Image (tube, rainbow, N blue to C red; front, side):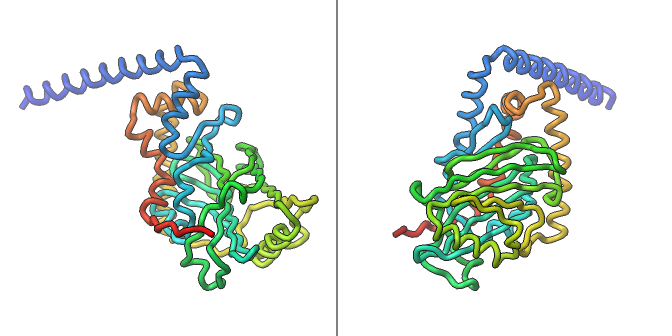
Length: 301
């Protein structure tokens, strides 16, 4: 018995020594890398997941050619999100334009160990009745249908990031930050190609519950604040509570494990070299949601 415990203690000590040496080797390796080399390495690791690193913001964002584009959107994604540790406020805005029902949706909240926000642009094949919105597949827009969008995400009045561009899916994720969706405020601006599309979108906003006085319009650009959602949220209480409990725990573990570094670039590289399985798991928050409920993509007009 004593011999058994002695062997176990020796194995534990050897494991701690090896682990300590491995950590120090990884830390030295990362600190010796040039900044450009780090960015290229991290982006090559993020590309298969549809994301890239923005050094000026120190955040993760979606790529223009992200594989998620092929999956489009259906309401089931949002309803089942808490099952995949994604707890967010969502604001789907539906409107009819050019013979099709369009959807521009806004999200803000907790995505695993990431605090983030999203804007996505989609449309159906034809005009849908409101009763069909929740059970229809919406396609991601084509390149010539993308809009210029900007998003500022605030946590309790503190700016987390500001991002903009001509996109079909504009996202930003602050890694290792925990929040409740209600503590986030998103300031949004969208620029439309013509007055007709702008008018249709404004009608969708007002129909969803936004007041005209809260919308700021300049030429073909509309700006507003997404704080408390006007649309009904579908989040089971227990599942949401459990997901947030796990998210808070894993955020703490992430910060503890990556404590030798301060910026996201170094932290993620360290996590990849030290715990590659954890690195991959962290980036599956969007993959799980869309692959599990994959719908065949219909031909577009």
